Image 1 (cartoon, rainbow, N blue to C red):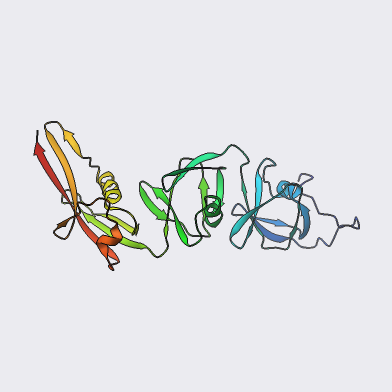
Image 2: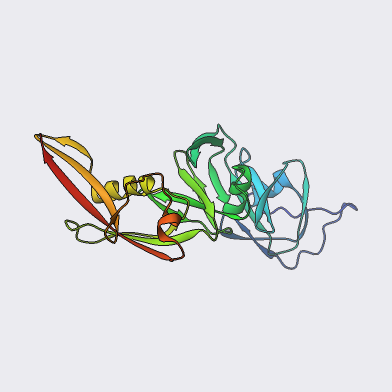
Length: 243
């Protein structure tokens, strides 16, 4: 074992405390066993094999709070820590706006605070163009280039869009009621691999229908279309014109 692995912290009197048992702590989702008591953060990072160049965060009430390398922390057992790289920031998108954050793992509640997302909103991560809601206590690994969206917790509905040429419908279980018809249409076309405009001698256009009513107002929100309904079922209609 290395000198660090054999480390036992020293009390103010200069004597080693009782070292007959270790306690469990979690660092970056990995379990470590250390002796309870006070540690200088830089020393603790060595013991749990966190690179000295990384930032260590202690999870308090679901939030990772960064601790300075020169600070002293007290380990009691059951403590949870998350580390992240101390390097150049990367760019992520939130609701169409650019933000710059350090790469690495974040507890969602902490990331929301960094991105100025209100606590009463849900943070979503776009995966293959489909927004997936993130639990407050979940961990998301930011690498750069991610697209996030925020929405009201209570303002969601299920959207199902059928297209006759598709083998299965487009489905979004947590669509925002504030999303516009135009935004939904763009996502639906992408999901079905379709595009509007001229292709050869033909021009293709697409319209969403709610029942028999065409949704021509692309600025109308899904909430306005659905009313009090929790599920919005639509159809995508294709129009082809020559020339």
